[in-house]
Image (cartoon, rainbow, N blue to C red; front, side):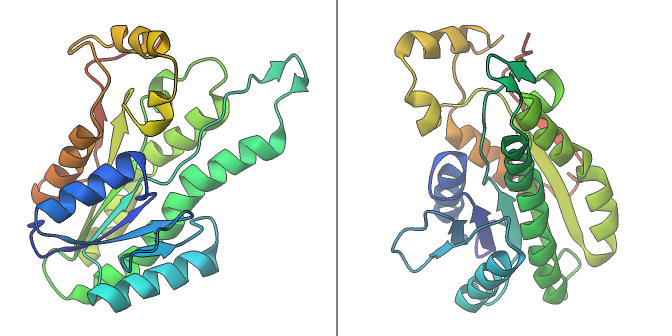
Length: 240
């Protein structure tokens, strides 16, 4: 699928990897509608809670209204917490664990199921492409990442069954598992902490550029033989 003249929705597109993806897609000639809890005042920004069936459905309907349909869905909406299974204050807070899984995993599925139903209406050989955001934490989760790693492992794990489910509708599904990227959240850490994280990357020994994530998402869209795959984008980083 050519990015030029395509119609894409990007969840979590107001910042970080989502914003970089939205910008890159627009630069390649795509039309993009951002779905985000913190939607801006631009007409192509739609307020949405990805964990809510009603909110996501209304946002998808608005995106279809704005663009006339959907060809691409990139799910970047996500949250992260750091909490050990048993810490100084006792056992891991269950509501916090549930919230991370709800946003990162269920939120992605909620959006993509609705987007896929719209894509199926396109009536082409290839009706759409879905790109989800997993993480290296799905495979190399560290201490304090039980909730985040579980949510991202679920995202990785549903990639192949989704691709199989949607193949008959002409829709491809892949996931990107990014390593340590220079998002606004990470850039807010002290420089010595950022440098320490970057030194863990095998090569190149630096933080990932969000545009590199965006370009990978774009490549997945344009490479018609990529399907059912989770692609690590991490400079050969293996967390210890």
